[in-house]
Amino acid sequence: MTGVSQSTVSRALRGSPLVSEETRQRIKAAADQLNYKVDKNASNLRSQHSGTLALLLFEDPTADESHINPFFLSMLGSITRACALRGYDLLISFQQLSYNWHADYADTKKADGLILLGYGDYLAYLDKLQNLADQGMRSIRWGAVLPDQPDISIGCDNFQGGRAIALHLLEQSCRRIAFLGDASSHYPEFFERYRGYVAGLQEAGLAADPALQVDAAESTEQAGYQALESLLARDTPFDAVFAASDLIAIGAMRALADRCIKVPEQVAVAGFDDIPMSRFLNPPLTSVLQDTKLAGETLVDNLLRLIRGEPVETRLLPVKLVVRRSSQFGKS
Image (cartoon, rainbow, N blue to C red; front, side):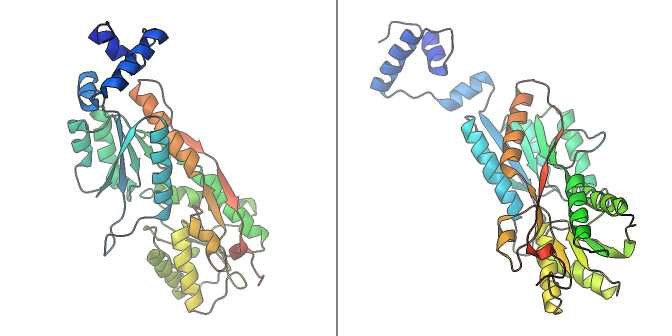
């Protein structure tokens, strides 16, 4: 109909600058008249490009397998929007850490690249990250920035977030600040928040008391409840709680309420993540905001750079302290 070659039609429909605007419009009009649509699968097969990114979400299993951290839901939404705006489809897959997900995605070419979200025990996860790197799979991870890591990661500044919480609680005249969360290299994001908390105490001339740190590896309300009960069982005085996540903080607040300990009159509480429900608690929860919109855009843009063979560096995104009533110690 247009009197041009098949290759010219192909270029025009791909938006190639090699085709003049006049010819492109003529080809587009003919395609519309014929109701012609490009076969995306055939095009992808020829170009070895799927036009799809995969988001692999790892979550700690719960009894009914229904638990998803609200922070991850917010991240999932921001990543989905970022992909759509850049013309990519997003394949979302929930994974168990014990599966061979790394081999599956690297071998089957389901996606041009992977975004990894959540990982539980980092040391147990490390070998699979190394395998991905060895297989040449383009991947990027939301998480801690660590020395000698085998992959590219984008994360928030957990250290500064933990430091900001500690300094804020100290400004509220708290001096016995408990930390609920795993403080080891197995959970490096929690560990960085703990290190920031310790640094904040040191700036005020205080040493962190080991008796005030209670492990809570899972980011769940139940883990927070149990950690607070363990803290109370130690019979060690405390006037504030810094929980490594908002869900842990919510569980801790419930445990305090069950013991008739008032927040913030008797114990100040702060969390981390600033999930949407934090502002609707009673009292509203002080937390550290991670910008999930910026995070999603940064993950997608950097993964696309990796796919194009452009240089990409691991980086930290800034955080923001959001002060609410739960941390205003001694006030009703």
